[in-house]
Image (cartoon, rainbow, N blue to C red; front, side):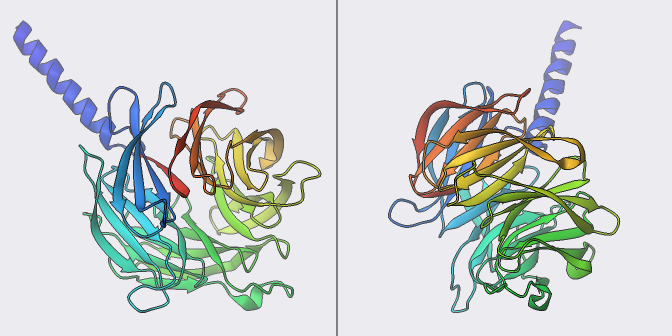
Length: 384
């Protein structure tokens, strides 16, 4: 009887462990460790995507070396089960056309190395962002130089198919002083998978498209966009967990704007804006924005001031400044918060370092942890 009970308990533990390692955001390693992949701009100091082992108890990062040699993987995302990693290759030319590329990789569960599964042209130059829809069956890509947004079917094995839809903002709807033209910078899907949103830095708009997940087709919503003041340069955005608010960070104006999101119609209504820079600081640009998993705090990075601005989320989505924390390096192009909301890692592009911060769960404030970790030209952090 005792032997039978032990066998049953062992089997149950195995089932629970398998379930935990397959759920989105779950650690793929044991002993409070998880894998972090870092995307880079390739050149003299970098050759592609690098892997690190992250200690969730101490915040320590252990380099595991080059995971995949691939050109300028400037933004990464992963499948819900953690078995596939996707990367944009921020190129101006691919296979003789004015296009970048997007690549899918299989994750080796033992070595954490990445093996190429497929690659597709992005139908526009300089792809700089990508996002999976809520089903994981479609991948959207933002082309910065091309100023358009492409949608790719994803097979069950992570294999990418040619784009089924390519869209772009309407320049005639932009402000009269807009001279930059289309500059696609981010894509993302709403929680109900009915809309794809896109930030166009050149048109000063957050675009909204209706998403037909059965056919892989995008069509402009009505209204098709929400405008920001001319010259703002919206770069990235993040939904609040309540699904009612969207926060957009503007690269050139160095502001975060709160929008009300109508889940039924796909309408964005602009509310208040706050500066990401301290009073008296007038130079520099912003980069990344993230909402804490609790929904209580918002974080934005400042390049030039080289800091993370921390805000409290108040009623109606209004933001109140809590802290400016130095990233201990130069040009924090990206940062990421771990799925549990305990840690933040910032990628300092110009100084070639990763900086780890502990997040206070009560105040949202950041505290630096440990030494800086070196990696060439880091521009994206992906917690597995």
